Image 1 (cartoon, helix red, strand yellow):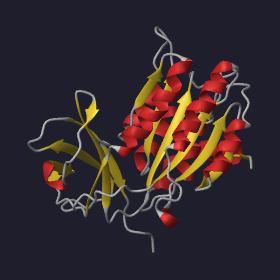
Image 2: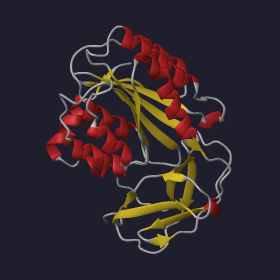
Image 3: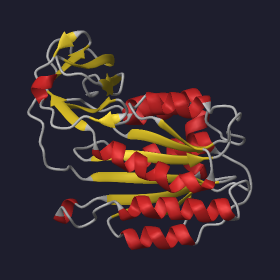
Image 4: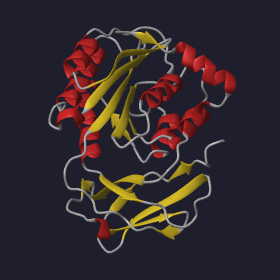
Length: 293
C-alpha cells in the first residue's frame, strides 16, 4: 500500500499550527533515559539511582520494570536521486537488519510494530504500523530512488503516525542530504518533536568534510535521541543496529507529576545520584491545560 501524505502537510503549513496535535493531558510522565560510561550502556540501574526534576522539583519515580517493553518504530527513508545504485542496496540491507531485530510476536497482542515511510518530491506511506514485518520488508525491497528531498515533511509525517499512549515509540530517519523541498519549516518540526512521545533518531550518510545536518541534530535532541553517522555504505547496517541497541538500552522512568501542574513547557533534568555515567534524555515536555467545556 502506498499513501501520499501531501494533503496533511499542506494543511499543516497553511495553518502554521502543526505541533498543536501533540498536546495531551499528562497524568503519568515517562522519560526514556540512556546511561553510558565510556560509550557503553550502563546496565542494572534502578529507579533509586536516578533523580528527575520536573520544572525544578524532584519527583518520586515508580519502579523500573526489567521486562522489555515493546516498541513501535517508523522507518523514514530518504529515497532521493542521490540514494541510488549500491547505496540503495546498502540501505535496504541496513533497514532490513533493523526489522530483523524487532519482535512482532514475543509479546502476544502487544508485539512490536513497524511502519515504512519514504520521501522524495513527496512523502509516501509505504506500509502503516503493523506487526506483520514481512509486509514492511516487501515494501522495502520495492523502493526506488529518484527526485529531491523533503526531509522536514517526512519527519513530521512520521511523528503524526505515532499516537500518544502507553506504548514506547521511535522514529528512525535516514538521509544523505539537506532538505530541498519541504512545506514545513525546521522550527515547526522541532516543535512537533518536542510535543511528541517518540524518541527520534537519525542515521546520516556523510563523508568526511560534508556539512552537518543542523536540523537533524536539533530535532533528535528535542526528543532525547541522537544522530549516528555512516561514513560509507558499508557502515549503514552497523549504524542502524546501533540505533536499535540504543533504544533497547534505555531506562523508562515514570512518575505522576508533583508540584507545578500549570500548562505549557516543563523542563526536565535527569541525572544519576551516585553512580557514574552520562545521561541522555529529553529536555522537557508540554503539559496541556484542562479540556475546553
